[in-house]
Image 1 (cartoon, one colour):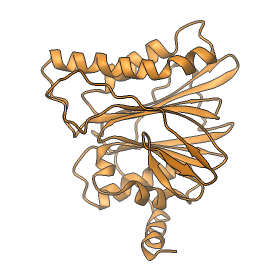
Image 2 (cartoon, helix red, strand yellow; image 1 turned 180 degrees about the horizontal axis):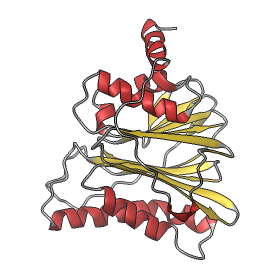
Image 3 (cartoon, helix red, strand yellow; image 1 turned 45 degrees about the vertical axis):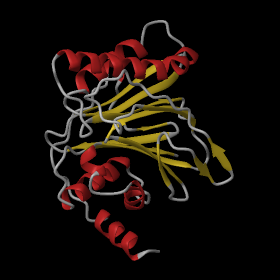
Image 4 (cartoon, one colour; image 1 turned 90 degrees about the horizontal axis):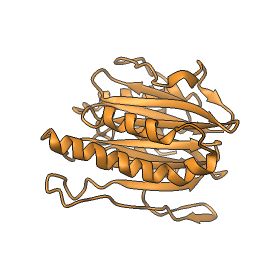
Length: 260
């Protein structure tokens, strides 16, 4: 094993609680457990680290989860739109799966329009990363700006949502779409990417994290750091601590989802 990986594992075992831990926004359906059939999750946010959501809704006897980390400008509008339009009454699993990508895109467009009206500049420093998990066997994920959603395989390989990559014996092509309307205040790198994917037997983790994490470490470094940590909350804390130790100057928030 590489010496750098061993060093990161050693640091992870010494993890301490840093920053301010937020309350999950979960509506009436949330219960005080973080391990569910098929996966578990944990989150951590340093004070003034933007906002996050971890909400569970039961649809046709199965759980549907919405996770997300957001910057301060986009957070409230994005969360409110997605929760209002994704979890409508009398909706079934198939409808949620079919409409999820469209809801994410429309939430982004509406938020961008409101920010434009309020003369708030959408720069490369901000953004969001979100994932919708259904029946613990498939998910839709999206990221924008310097926030990233990252999938980690059981062999340790990490890949950002929106890229085509190979998981051992099977090649999965991510479904992608871009949203843009010619707004010159949005940089070329600020592209909304939405992906639909099944949870394969080799899928280990999904990491959602803000720019404060990714500005100081590569996605493979983050995967190496927490892949061995079974407890999702400890893994999220470990990412936050490492970002702080590396002198990150941006907002730090992250969610770790581990599939079992």
